[in-house]
Image (cartoon, rainbow, N blue to C red; front, side, top):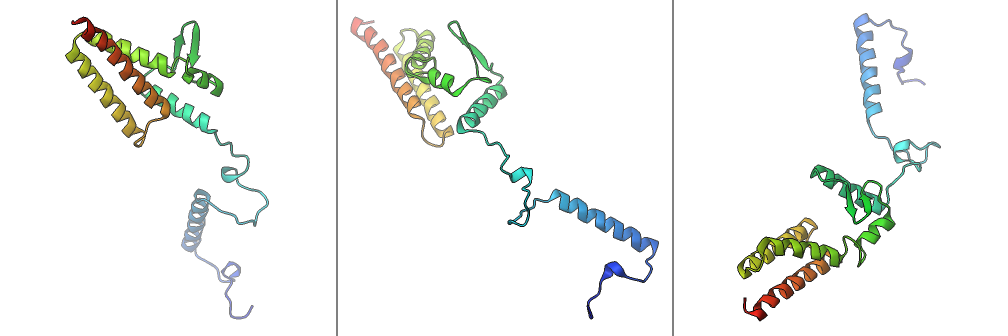
Length: 181
């Protein structure tokens, strides 16, 4: 190995100050390399846990459920509610239970959800046509805001719910127009 210098096998003694600097430099290098991500391109048999095959990735349903749960918690809302005699807990809800809730006859289905919104609106404005229009405008704005929050388009169930709300409100208003009130 002529012409190459191997600093690890020096025969020259080093001072205490130089030795301290060398120890500090080695510690910094160890700390830096421990905190950095490392990628192996087939040189190692063992794969680190962070990127290894043992990494459990949540299903799309679990990701969505976790997002809904987190959103409800941040808003201070309960993660449990009753649908008649049945208690529903968002923390433990299965995919099948969620599908049943948004089914046509489910608690969050088009018919029941639109009816709850219409009942709330009717209780708020009674038979006053001006208040009815204000309520419809507020519902329009709410759906537009939700649409913006979802990136410009709402899921089909939301669109169907909106249509059902407007249909029910128009039917409610029509009964007073026909009777002359």
